[in-house]
Amino acid sequence: MKNVLKIAAIATASFIAATSAQAASNVTGTTTATFTDAKPSTATFTGIGTNAVTWGVAADGAKVNQMTFAANTPFSATVGQQFKVGSLSYYNGTVNNGTELNSLGLNLGFNFSDPAIGAFTKSFMMKLNNTPNTGTADENADYVTFDSLVTSDIFTVNGQSYTFQLKGFTNVVGDGFLDSTAREFHVREGGNASADVFGVLNVAAVPEPATWAMMLVGFGMVAGATRYRRRSTNAVYA
Image (cartoon, rainbow, N blue to C red; front, top):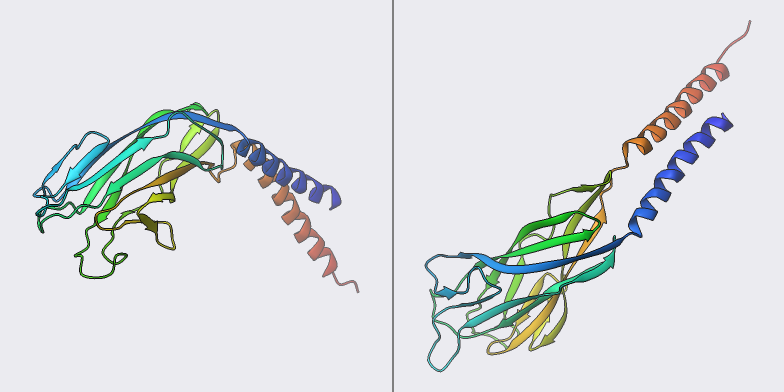
C-alpha cells in the first residue's frame, strides 16, 4: 500500500512541478490594434480599420467623441504574469442624439515569439455608453466596457497548451475613473483620459498525456489496493 501511495504522490508532484516550470516560461511578442464593427451603422463615425476613431455630430461649440488605442509593442512577461497590451484614450465630446455609436470592436493582433504561438487576431467588443448629461459630473461621464475579456481559443506549442485573456482596465490618467470591477472606464463630459489594458497568457489546465497516464495508473492502483484491503478487513472466519 505504501508503494502505491508513493507512486501516486510522485505522479501528482510531477504534474505540479511541470506546471510550475511552464508557468515560469518567458512571454514575448508584438501587438497591433484596430477598431471595427461600429454600431449602429446609422451613426456618424470615422476611422474604422485604424487605431483612431471619432463619432457623433458635435453640438454647438462642442467636439465629437474620439478614441485611440496605442499598442504596447514589443511586450515581455512570464506565463501567468499580466502584461500591458496597450492604452485606450477617450475624449468625451458632446454630440447630437442619434449620431453616437453604441459599440465598437477592438481587433488585437498578437504575434507571440515565445512561446512560439505565432500570429493571431482576437476581436473584443466594447460597449460605448453615451450618457444624457442630466446629472453630476460623474453621472454624466461616458464609459467604455468590454462585453467579454475571455477567449475560447487554446494554443498548443510543443505539447503545452495556453489560453489568453484580457484583464480589464487600470492606471487611469486624466479626467476619468474606473468602477469597482475595473471593467468600466469612465470619462467625464468634455474631458480626456486614458487607461491601460492588460492581458495574460496562462497555461491551460490540461496535463500532458504522459502526466495523465502516470496519475491514472497511480490512482488506479490506490483504488484497487483500497478495495482489496476493505475485503480483507471484512472477512469473517468460522
